[in-house]
Length: 458
Image (cartoon, rainbow, N blue to C red; front, top):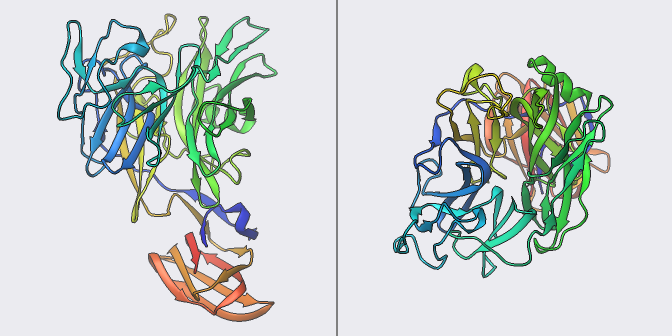
């Protein structure tokens, strides 16, 4: 059994333990606008996958209704193959003219008025999932005309509707106080053993008569038939306090990108810190990412008041918006977390914006995190007691950093102590200990200036 923190379902008792997200360091772009149809953005609103073809990235570019494709052998150095004939004068959903059965090495002929591009679809906010057992293994859930659409592709090179779209009709929310209608256009989607889940943007009107972006949720077995959308997370005073500390007025939830982690879920929460609402609608502000946790995918909480990826991480005070891929890439020895950040604010292209935008850029970057170290259980002096577990092979693995401190592990069975360990001044991701065989082992862990990231009983 592998325990990845916060691990609500595996903890019996915790005293003076904090669950701290990894620290993300500044890093260079791995993808920047290159082609005319990409400017000024190549951002994740999108997904990064690792398949038999290597790393594949599906990203938003241009006017935010174009989905670009890039591939890589190592996840760091990317190329953008040109394989689709594109008619930019066509309806947004029909701009891609290439054939999905045509491979990268034999692109289609380019007709009059067409351009050879790396675009694979004309949609907004695409989540791409990969199911190798399906005849159309690449699945896309994205916002388009009339609501949310379901699409699929054989090779990931051209997406087509597989049923009647939109699969979720347009969700519109009217504020009776202002008369303005707000439309849902953000819905990161993921697949796990239960099926598909989309975290769909909903809206609530607060006591100050402001329209607030919230996190909604809908589920599907096949990406075509969906449950009713239910609001599951509403921003509150704690989020507003974060925004005010950053110089803004209030905060909304712009999006939430969840992914399975241990027996629960982590989520990258896009917190929109708002200065004001424009007369024409929408808001002026900046966006940064916080790490959130849920034991069941429905009930969510932020792990910290400090941003996981702040808007000023790479661009400094010029930083504007940070968004993330729908899920990270989990590898044997590290986690690749792809995100995008801009040097301009949300709302800067509205008519009543009074600032200026010079050399706008929205680029994609990759943060590399040691395996299992997205979240750590840490304390200067605290204690964790885990629910009883079995160790059929008599082995215990720790992913731990006790440099400058110590972790003490006590193991008992039926109330009797059977083993104890002291891990002092070590930084190991695979520290194996031999423990007694037992069907019901009780583990108590004391942390003194130490951080435990994962625990595995075998």
